[in-house]
Image (cartoon, rainbow, N blue to C red; front, side, top):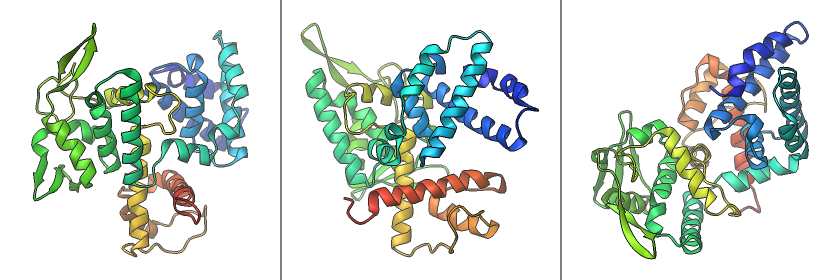
Length: 334
């Protein structure tokens, strides 16, 4: 575990008696998010650069200035406690003090990390690959893995499902590509199928070494996802792969993150279901508790099971979905 998850219980124990139970639950929830982010980033909160700290706030889904201030206050309060435990926190506190709501506001978040359609995702992927190959002097095929990861995320495969996908699970017949998962079959968009087919057949890519282009081959195995160093991938290696892909162009308009692309695809499909009246949602007041009979509607809409214990998770999903629709599909948006 990372620093936050290692120290959280001690911190909350020190807070007990000085804060209401509701506040302690909020502290725990926020620190769990931050702790998970630490593990995903592979670095401690204390050593994160400003860009990572901004992404941490993005992961909180702060859709108001007050929400942003609350999250920031909880982090600074926790850091003050760490200082009392002997940790050096001055640098990260200074970086946090410079982050504003404008850095992570909804428009900033959706414009940077989310996609409103597969055609938009494909457009930005092609542009990113073309520019990165030209500026870095690389073979475009070296970025094919990142494209395929984005395709799988958009079509609703979790990182774990993507890692488990075997070459034999890919069916390409009658101009339609299907991915056969244990629980369902997924049909790919035509352009997505092109990337997957190319990667399925690829032996590797060329890399410039000492002024000469040399072939670098993928490790052979049964998994669709493989690299030049391993015959399969893990959720962690997926994250690392996309981090390197993004790092090629740090000033790029879009950042490709598996979880954000996954949510983009899920919300796009939900919107299409609403628009076609395939699923009619019961009327509800924004922010009101989700009744048990409503869960089946949202489970079908978001392609996700929600149990009674997922009440707050579902409320966050609903709120994020409404913001997603407002950003991408409101009048005046492309």
